[in-house]
Amino acid sequence: MPENYTATVTDKRPGYGQLLRTRGAWTFLLPGFAARQPFAMLTLSTVLLVQHTTGSYGTAGAVSATTGVSMALFAPFTGKLADRFGQRAVLVPGVLLHTASVLLLTVLALTDAPLWTLFVAAVPTGASTPQVGPMVRARWGVKLQGSPLMTTAAAFESVTDEFTFVLGPLFATALCTSVHPAAGLVTEASLTLLGGLLFAAQRGTQPLPSRSAGAAHARVEHVSALRIPGVRVLIVAFLGIGSVFGGMQVALAAFTESIGEPGLNGVLYGTFAAGNMLSGIVCGAVAWKIAPQRRLLLAYTALAVTASGLWAAQSVLLLAGIGLLVGTCIAPALITGYTLVEKLVPPTARTEAFTWLTGAVALGQAAAVTVAGQLEDRLWDGAGFLVPMGGTVLAVLLLATLRSRLVPPSTGRTVARGVGHRVPVSVD
Image (cartoon, rainbow, N blue to C red; front, side):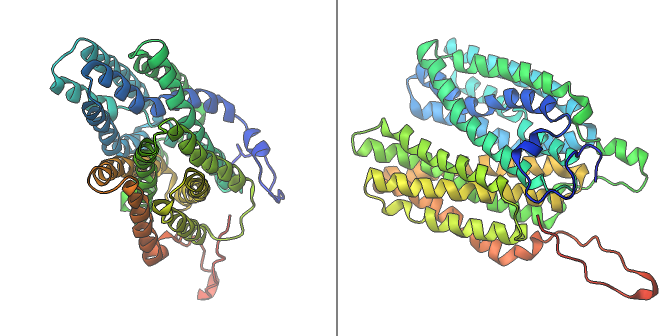
């Protein structure tokens, strides 16, 4: 048991109170929350500014999608560098580059620069987006290694992410519509700079870089998280979760527009997000006895079943109810997936693994937005709901087929005289 973990091994039910009393946790939680808030503001702030200057939602969506795809593609590389050289060494230059790129994109949009320059600026803007969420999760792994609070920490981070994605768009909308169309991006850049630098300054809680670990222990070798079969399975599974977010964003907007009540879009999506947050809180407060790989399959199956009912909803109340159920099923799948990373991946590659999963959600969301938009244009209003159904069903079939790859490697020992003993199956 690591010395940072302050609870006792006799604790029967891990809770949020114990988690937040972990020594040194608040030193990275508070600046981490400020630094990850811009992550949820970037996409919508870009859309609102570019639409204001160009008059085209199509152009605004394309520029915003460029930032999302760039982030998804470069996030794992950022995580790998953070594992190898340390979070601070990667975060400080990344924060500075992101701030400069966002301000450049803002200036280009406001000065009616050629359209191609917006796309050029959008690439480094997305690629340099700080991966603070995965870095916070990696710090929890250092603090709680081997403790029963790891599932609680994963739940806490999932709830924090959901709260961020509820608050961020509201904040961006208020700034861009009430202050100035560029206020959202300027605030995003400011929060990134301030929160990112404060987070990077907390050196005592960051994981030991694998390069330093290798120097201290000659046998330690940095292994890419992508080489671990279980991580590859989780990446594909998280693409399916991204399809739910992206597909619902487009389909809900089209559905509410078709019934002449576009204002209900925020209410319906808020109901979906509320279900996600509430189930995340409950999931983290439960002392689970079911192995995480089995829990993931059960949670994902429930997600696929509920998501498959979205396209059949013909009323606002029914759609709100099904959306609430879908949101309720997402959090357990996300939380269990992140919990499995702690069991499957060595500490020297966890930040990279977390960024692969975060990037997979973003990439799945970007693809789902594109496909759902095409379905809405070419088929019927609400056809975009087929995207969450297809993405989750395919993912659950993959999990059922490859679930054995999610079993953590055995760490048991062989006793003297060659007598082997069964290794107990680890549970949360």
